[in-house]
Image 1 (cartoon, rainbow, N blue to C red):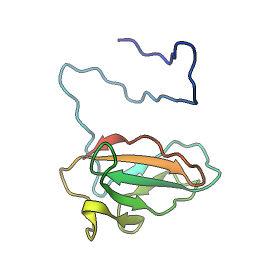
Image 2: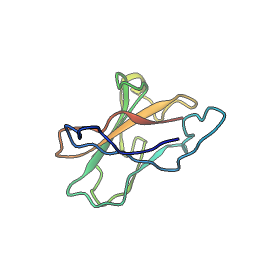
Image 3: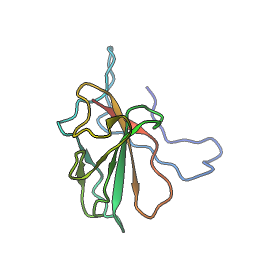
Length: 123
């Protein structure tokens, strides 16, 4: 096993990697099982502005099923529910995500043009 942040002649753009709770297994390790309703946590760094989250029913983000309302920059968590956002796409009119389905999320700081990649699958 080899982990390293190395980009040959250097990266052409700003990049980052996170290794958290790294596990090596002889059996497949699936997506995490989230609480109901799921809660998204972010790092403790203070943000200049608010942040937002989107949840999708596919890894490419073609079916965005929940969009958060802006969360204060000092807030470290956000619950995926009707009080903190709106259900959209195939979950329009729902009050929660489908139990047992796999979802992906992305996040961005408000005022920044780019979202994070779709990542962190959970059930």
